[in-house]
Length: 492
Image (tube, rainbow, N blue to C red):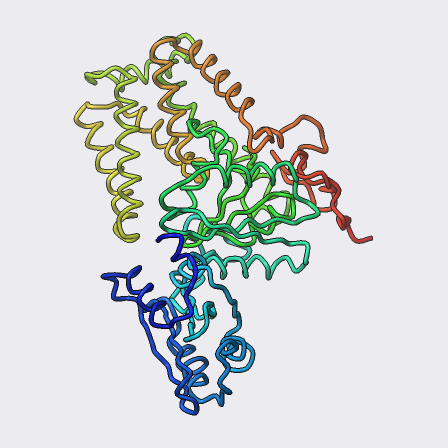
């Protein structure tokens, strides 16, 4: 589109020809000419995209009133009169900028142009179908809110707004994707947000160009502090109550149109082990559950490596009876311990991935039957030993307990296996030290991801355990300059 076509003309026919040339070979553009019955000299035209609008609103609240309204012939005031007295749209904007008009048209608005006017009215008529609000499959809880986000950005924003009823809650919109023109909303509490984090986020969002944004992960990878690290530095959730809780701690939420996933930052490593259900049950039980999840993560990544290291290089660490039992079970197995461990772990990941991609009823059956049948058959055929079946089963079960960290545990688990197959427990210790150093050096928008795990009683009231609400008087350090909570205290 040339510079001369960036604005509308006063001729209705020229404007219609312009839209026809822009939407050439696109039959979804609907052009509806309208003539006022009482004054045929007034010619107008409605333009909208079929399937993106509510036809009932257009017919009853726009076309019919325009046809029947008693206009005085005002060549330069038709749109003003129409906007103020005729159409009943909830949102009416007036502009002559073609880029703004096209963006609104493609996002479900209806455009009204009139002969003799070089501007257009942008009328709110969005009406596409959206998915019903259901509980997210990846974040199921036994107790607490069960609402989940959907693919509509405005509906997602309303679910958060309903939980935080204060004008301090701010929403800033921008558009990403040169072709998709995806709407993105940055949400934060003005009195709690860390201004440095907010400025850095805006800088990163405005510093890259991308052809299209179809999911929140497109943005997450582009603005991540460590794009080559398996450790995520940007949080994500599908639940509005989780987003509300993070906003109340000073974090920033990013809504992306077309996806139910909402990004949050800064992200701390301890968030991977926190569940929203922790805050809806007694703090004793939530602390026990969190300790189990943290323990499960370390068991998941360390068990196969320790088993291979001890049985291959450090048999002296095992009791004699246990060592003899493992040796007897390995009689006839042609593969070394590290190979059979890698083989079974790969098979387990294949079964888990297949179970996740198949229909729910078939997937559960495949996972259970597949593990039982393949495991038993492999032991009887002397391809693998029985102890390694137990090790892989423990590894798989504990890995499932921390779904938010899936991916990192797999990479670390296989990495440790490779290291211990070469250097035994010495390699294991150096690898774990390297992982700790890597985590220590990672930041999320200037905030260390291990920031929530500082030593000290006040810093650990919502990390490895969850203290009672009346003891959690401070927000996490580094996330906000307003650390003190306003209204925490038990009833006397």
